[in-house]
Image (cartoon, rainbow, N blue to C red; front, side, top):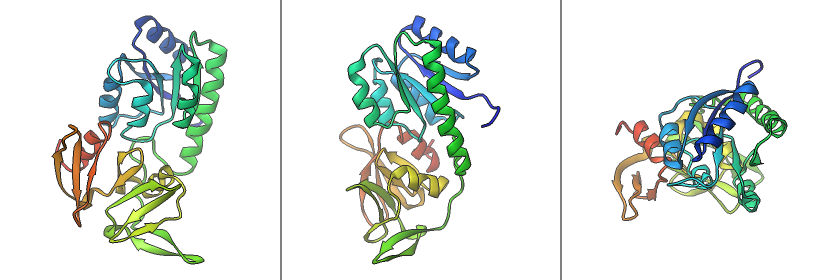
Length: 245
């Protein structure tokens, strides 16, 4: 990322604030790749797989709030929340936001936020992560076994879930991996897995069927019979990986 402009998406339902923040970002050296006015438009844009380094999301937006969008991202992406309401800060940082900007945003405060963003994006690049597709990923992964680890074939695994402060693999049985977060698992496995929702990774080749559930969300049936619900934001990306358009 050294020398490259940060590619950022801005979402804000008030046109004046949207144009102002986009202008400040450009003046700070960023490339504004999209200017959107509601949450569903953000998820639709991200589902197309276009390159972006960070999202600047207003919290109060029609359709889906910025917090809803952050919880439903189809792929990992650093988020900065922008709002007039300080009381949302706790929830913002619970969702691992890079920063939280209060309106009216100043150039000085934005510069500090961009410094944090650049550091995070550069760290991701050093770890071999691509902001869009990621590496192809290994065919095996480590799980805990007594005082050591054993390597499990990814081909025998249907999905990964983050629960009980650990990442668990499902490969005929529930196995505790060595990863501490789902983001670590996703970075290691790359394009061999796809997000189902913020706590779920699915191996696309393990999907044997799909349908629309009672909630209106996509449900997938995995080899072995397990059925899982997919988030609104993740559904387009998973369907694309399955060749369903």
